[in-house]
Length: 217
Length: 217
DNA sequence: GGCTAAGATATTGTTCAACAATTCTCAATA
DNA sequence: TATTGAGAATTGTTGAACAATATCTTAGCC
Image (tube, rainbow over all chains, first blue to last red; front, side, top):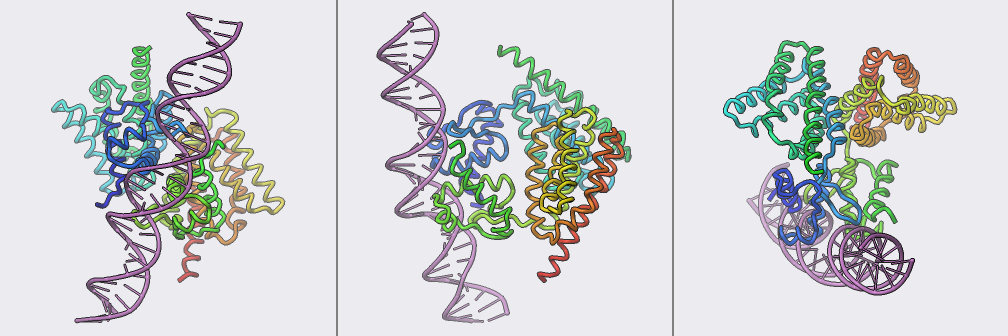
């Protein structure tokens, strides 16, 4: 066993949260969960800390931990950071390792193949990989880790999205265009396109969140 | 008491680490520290998690927690991320809230006053505040938090620096120049200057680390 | 009826003691 | 010198207990 119990428990909870089994806002009771998963409260608390670090849950003193609720302000902020990190990647594209540049194109290829066979879940996943690959062009472990955390947070917000197809389809062609600009060394143009790209995506998500907000009111 | 015991303990350890009382590489024994601070092992472990989150310590399974050792590769990476975040701030300067822009100038003023009276410790602190203020121009809570973590990590590396004056003095005038470019709306020039600025600072630190490396060999 | 306040209940925060699992130490051996 | 293996030391995990805090209930009041 190379993973601690707390790490395994955190893994189970992570899956349940990302799978929708534990919707945003749910309170994670120490006693109930500990009994359910067969671990002590102390170990469960260590698992909670790990998830707090991934910002999948929030911890409120004397009140417990809750599945993170990602509101429109959070989404806006996440896109601000993404813009900073992905732009840095695009800027570094010229001097990036060939393997890192290849990963960008590979992600776009993958997304297009998934779209061709109508697997929109996989398209969504490949799209996230594409953006992570953009940021990874910087060759920075800390930027990679930051992107992973940001995209995990964003996945929580995507739970509120109705149709993955409606959201991802328009961006397939833009991903390809962006990848081509990078291959051709058009860095300034790529940076400009990336900026408007992210702005448009943000607007789409905010629109969907507002709709869902309306439903629940 | 609005702070948990674990948070207070983490605070004590943070001070000891940043104050140099616990040098990089030191192993933090649960039994010894718990006895010293008068808290149980479980509480101490929660405090450790908080410090791991701040990346002041690292946790190795079954081996314990150690004060973080920041090596040249880390410093280089930290500067990569800083460049991404501070450049994003500079880019957002035009539309930033007046209070955020004022904070940049205020930090430069503060540093110059501290230098005038020879308080180089305070100059160092004001310099960090200046760079945090640059990143904060984005108006993003996540970028602010990320910068705080990065600068905390960097402070660990500064322990190896011989003279704060030798390192910070040359940058006083460049800080002022950068702030002025921002005030005058010269954003492109500011971004260029920031890039070379950070490259130069990185070289200086790496040089100092290499020197110290030589001493210990 | 609705509101406030006091008390009862449930949950988290912290400690302790014990044992299991893993790593480290170091002497004996080839 | 390198290796191995037993013993020591340390971390990982558990369960129970009590304290501190939050939440719920209910009695009393307007």
